[in-house]
Image 1 (cartoon, rainbow, N blue to C red):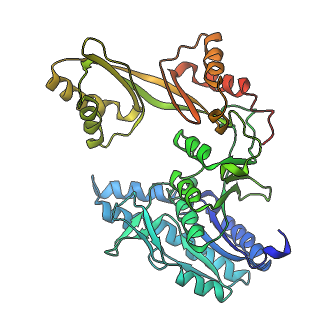
Image 2 (cartoon, rainbow, N blue to C red):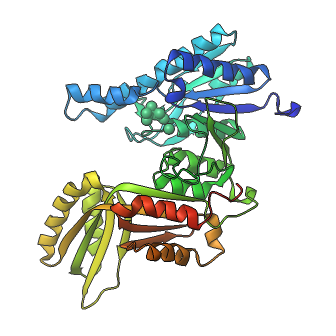
Image 3 (spheres, rainbow, N blue to C red):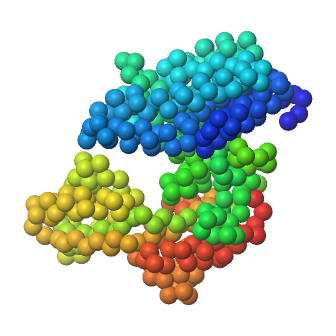
Amino acid sequence: MSENESNALIVQKFGGTSVGDPNRIKNVANRVKGYHDRGFKVVVVVSAMGKTTDGLIRLAQEVAEEPSKREMDMLLSTGEQVSIALLAMALHSVGVEAVSFTGAQVKILTDGNFSNARISKIDTKVIENSLAKGKVCIVAGFQGVDVDENITTLGRGGSDTSAVALAAALGARECEIYTDVDGVYTTDPNKVPQARLMKKISYDEMLELASLGAGVLHSRSVEFAKKYGVVIHVRSSFHFSEGTLVVPEEQIMEKLLVTGVTLKSDESRISLTDIPDRPGVAAEVFSRLAESGINIDMIVQSTGQNKLNTISFTVLRKDVESSEKSLNTVLKIWGSGSMSVAKDIAIVSAVGVGMKSHGGIAARMFNAFAKEGINIEMIATSEIKISCVIDKEHGQKALQLLHDVFGLEKTAG
Ligand code: ASP
Ligand code: MG
């Protein structure tokens, strides 16, 4: 970093693995000290240590079948409270003045949607006062408080969003997200050995990848970053190499046709055939599913024939049974239509902003599958994404194929 960057404000977030044990917390403290010593004003956001949150969830399940949502958030928020205090102590031990805050103490205001609350406002006064005194501010991730002062949490992985929201509110231009991987890859390196670390990726591409299961960042953190123009730097907490910058599209000079490819193997396809072709049918289907708390991924409807139509969609495999239950009721009411389920499907997708201005990507993808005899069951696209549903058996091969076909191992980031 250059001279004129001293005194700049930086927000750094450390995930569960990065603060997983006392030694790692000390390492984080040393890293933070490095920035502090160079004159940066540092705000640190931390997650709960290791798998603490999972442990707390299990604990709740042992005392109640359906724990109250409010009390659940009260419980889960304690994980982060442990990390902030320990990190503050570790910083004191290396001679850095630091102070820890819960979400409520720095007035991270959210709506009252327990377990999946949205941040509506952050009052930066408390943090700014401490920063002005030369202190490092450590804020508990994943939590806020609603207007009635109930503690709320932001959804699993939500500390990323706390960090980016704080960066936006404080006017920091960069938010570093320290994690246990080196950054964002062209695909999952565990599945494709030639996967390459990207230097830069646009917000929209990152959002698509996040929703396709590339679990590096909490989607909402990317939405925040995009809205407020905060650059996210995803990097490893275990070494000092640069990771991946998530930036506005204009900052990407070379717009690749395809930036990343993904594979989701935990979904199933449900098709409703010969259902009535009239207004309100789709509304009925998806309202029922929504009422049962089922998330839908891809939806494809064909054009109607003889007043009948077909709708296919994908749901998480774990939701298949409850989906079938809800839909059987609907089919009975209509008195027409049937349901078929393909339990073991895979969704392979290609994502890239270059698709906006170039044709032929879909054809290349479909040709690659055709050559290998892979049948495509469903296709869905967005402006920068093409997804295909295929048999789960071919998932891994299809992913490798796309990575090869679009030359992702060779291109420069
Ligand atoms: N501790 C929370 C979780 O495990 C939040 C986070 O890590 O971002 O989901
Ligand atoms: Mg995370």
